[in-house]
Length: 189
Image (cartoon, rainbow, N blue to C red; front, side):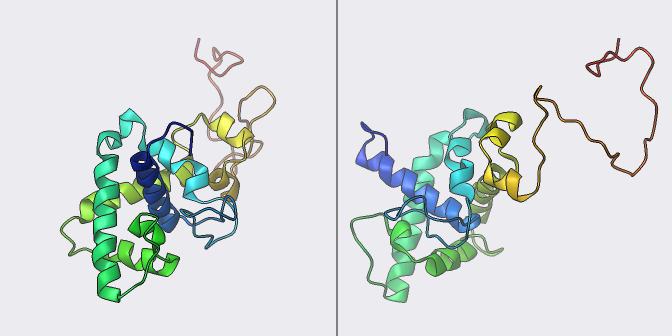
């Protein structure tokens, strides 16, 4: 965590990272990584920038992220008691859960009958969006940094000028000729 970050902020961050890692798992960032369970190879939602995306003002979630983390840990407390789990008390409860237990708890929170389902599904969608699209970054920058989701999907890198050009047409053939007044940059005149 960055120096100067409060223990409460650290707890919020690693709790949300653990949630994001449950949605799109990845490999641990270091041997001491507590939030990322290491359930999959390569970068998952955390490395893809899920927390950066969630913290953007445009998502509308940023002010409530501490509440999401608190609620997630409260649900984890209840779940851990129900399962009679002996967890590490030095970290937030959701973080202390194994990947299998995290997955089961998220499955329960996102189940159709759960009263808080819309909130947890919304949080999951943003975590998935960070991986699938890198929505919080300029695509060319994300590709230059080998964004894990875009790379996994085979998204091509732009040319040296930062523009994407495709040698094949989507439908296997050109559908229409460019307008004669179209500029070299592709803009209409």
